[in-house]
Length: 334
Image (cartoon, rainbow, N blue to C red; front, side, top):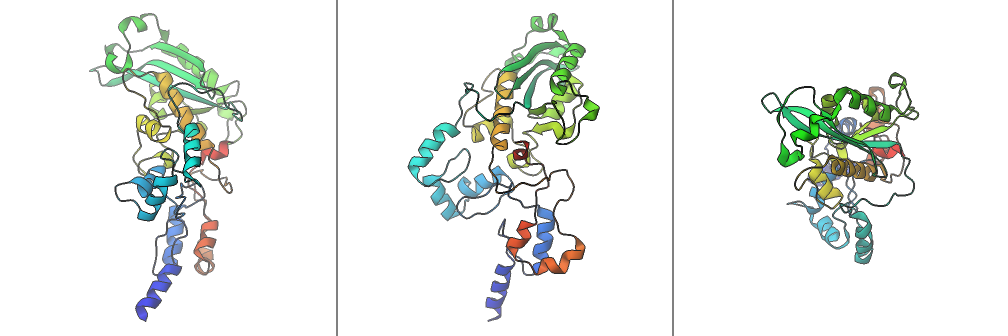
């Protein structure tokens, strides 16, 4: 009898998002305070479980030890790229033709605001060959057309051109654009007539959202600064990360969530720009039941200590309704 009562009580204290179960309701409240569950989290189309990242959802559906029932349904009616589940196998086949990209640039799509610019660089080696020096840069718009592309003459001597990866030869940099000139040109494109110091979250006027993969490193090598709230980095976006502290490579993300391969030989920064932009647009286009103005890095969940007793009387579903993500969801860019 006692075991049945305990089981029933534990089930009542089951998180409505990730389905973890707790013996006491106050433990569930503490769980909700620190986990920031929200409608922005990837969610299983079969059992409804929320996952912290798309990688976690992939493991849940098609990993080495998936949930059996979810894996069975997904194998028949699931898309391995976007991880959504559809009504029939015919619907999946029709969907996949549009979901899977190719290396060829698609036609411009309707509904695009043109607010974002993707940037990628190629580095050569300086000093003992291990120091990265920016030698090539590319910027594209949301229509995947090139806005700016140039070779850059590094400020320090080049000791390793890394030709097998970069395709850069000494003669390409001999009369290349000086770094200072490239800096000014890129800054003009990004600011688009706005003063950098005037930019504020969600009120940045004509300035561009900067998209890329590992942008901290690229901007550092270019000697540029740009506000963090204007940057959309596919290496740091929680739904695209491997774990909370480990990033997936752009090569993996492109293959897994766009359906084609990149970086198979000499790497073209244009190709990296396109992959990052497509990932950004795919994440930005996610449909959510409701929006939050969250993601400032501060605690957004409405679980103050003075409400503790009230919170403990709520159902798991009511607790989830109060919860919001602790990162800015890119769908809010729309």
